[in-house]
Length: 326
Image 1 (cartoon, one colour):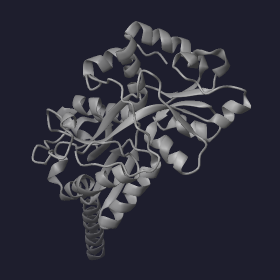
Image 2: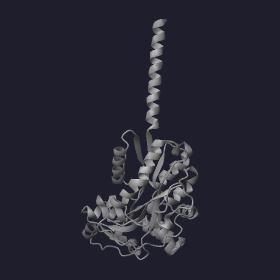
Image 3: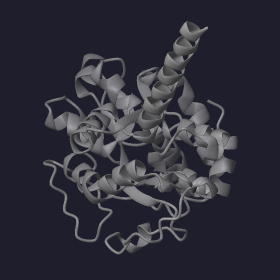
Image 4: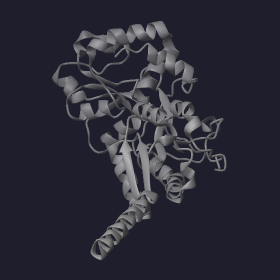
């Protein structure tokens, strides 16, 4: 009996030690739902691990629409601690699940980017453009399109890639831009005509340029900063803006309510706020969100922003996405 008693005690001690170790790991674990591209995630991950070597930092990539749907379904029970680069309209719709950030200083931001309810902070503003691979177009004897109407020409059949507005903030701002310029009826009629020319509606905003880089498509509804990044790396891509102007939107970062009570979460969020948001503007996504911000990335074009008033409206977004069938 004494032998079994000591064995029981040894097992119990192991269980307690394992539970304590697991609890310590959980206490130091910070989960980020991110909607930025992999090359940016890699940079953030490296900087976060360098700054916080004792924390277990997990960055899970989700397209912004998928991230919002997952967070809405999980609510406050989510494993997510911080959400990064979430479309602002989704951030506004999820505000009941987000921690109050009103103690933070928003004065550096452009006035139009300060949210009414301070449950999130702006991570970036990004614009869209029509990106072309002139080499592929030339091989097919085709010209670079000069308007949205040009994209309907049958010679561009299955040469176009566009992000899906239901999962991508980039896809949605193209849809919203044309809705603002043309009205709902003409916009949906246009996309019904365009669909046969679209090789793929991608889940994420980076999908079109990735397809152009792989030579799978010749024309993409893409992001200006990503196109510039690839051009500066030597990729044969061209950027075009049509007469309707460049669509644009902004994304947010925030803390899930209740998670602000954990020091590792606050340490990581503050490092995002104090360091990485500025690094991101200098290195990757440079369009202006701060009053004193300069664009340092070479060859960045002057962006002719379209009228995007109302893009953060939950009601308009729900109505537009309800009419999207692709």
